[in-house]
Amino acid sequence: MRPIAQATLDRLAELFAQDVTSAAAARAVGISKSTATAYRTRLGFPPAPPRSAANRSTLTLEQKWRTYTRAAEGGHLEWTGRHRADTGVMVMTHHGREYTARRVAFLVRTGREPEGTVTAECDHLGCVAPACVEDEPGRTRARGQLAAVLGLATPLTECGRGHATANHRRYDRDGHPYCGACRALTDARKAAA
Image (cartoon, rainbow, N blue to C red):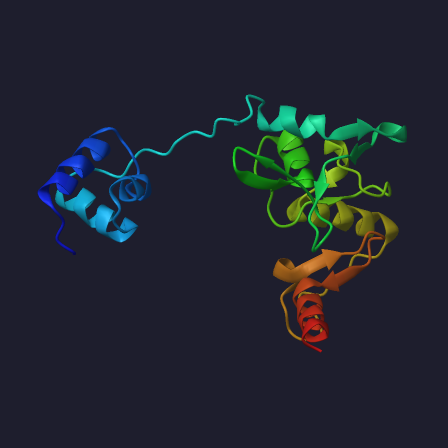
């Protein structure tokens, strides 16, 4: 740690007592942030408390999500908010954290965090209606029931490559079963090629 003048040390102590961050204190006295942080520890001051953003929304997550939806025919909801430029995924930011629109829709409907990817199970392109979205276990359960009704369910306990169907069985939208582990391997090979 680089030694600093007593006047600088006294000024740092004043700033730290006012809950100024190490970075701001370093700028104020003309030293590096790492030096200010080291002196903060040496002087016995805890890290500065996080500042709340001045423009932080007073809306709840659900309220803000609803501002980006618009009603569509058949009870569906369309997303009017932002899409990620690289993937096109519908997203929003709330209190500094990014959420996918369908994840919030799932939270609205169920009150719990989703497991795996949340997708719309309806045929309405871009739908984010809470009644239309499902997480991976819900999708597997609903599509498994469809497979049973259509007579597509299989009694096999393993796929052709030996993956246990109890852990890896998934279903297409039309109820046809497939192995999720095998599909993931195929997708990885395609991505690598």
